Length: 231
Image 1 (tube, rainbow, N blue to C red):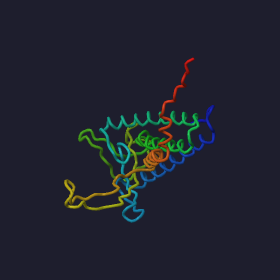
Image 2 (cartoon, helix red, strand yellow):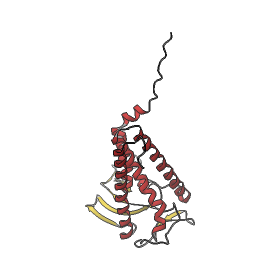
Image 3 (spheres, rainbow, N blue to C red):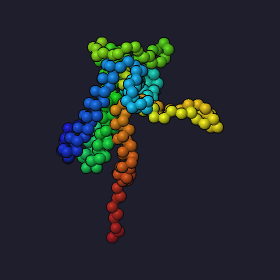
Image 4 (cartoon, rainbow, N blue to C red):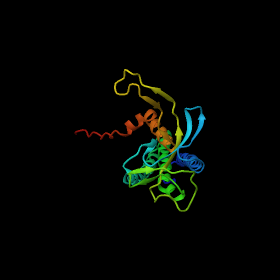
């Protein structure tokens, strides 16, 4: 996003810097995991409740899947449209002198969307192995071994899988017997595996809700029309 007439250069460059840092951290960790760990491999960070757990996600954030190969393509196209919309919105915010914190929150969401889009668009091209959709059984299939950078690739454009690795299974337990439907069954909190891009979207979005809901409410109001007094 290049500075243009009416934009404040300081917040523009702050936004660009934030997006760049998030993307660099996100991609560096993903590429390291992809080229050094086997699918499903674990590395403990803090005991059993903080770890690096390598999975590949063909669907949405936090491991949510959607509609097989066609759904994957739809999500990739939707991400491209969403990124374009966020960039346009950011330009409007800077032009209208929106609060800097709000602009940076939206920038964080943009960085997260771009980070996962890079995986979807290009990882199928630049890695030799990856999770692919098996049309015969209608499911995504994993692979063995560690991936390497390769010109051959494992999937077409927009069909790559997102690399997830951050896992915080903080609490394991069993529901009490007296609870209906789930009694005596085990539970895990927090189960989803995610990445830095997912975190950027979540932190940016929650920060908007917590700190800038009044600003959104105010900007959502229609300006009052001036009253014309009768002569």
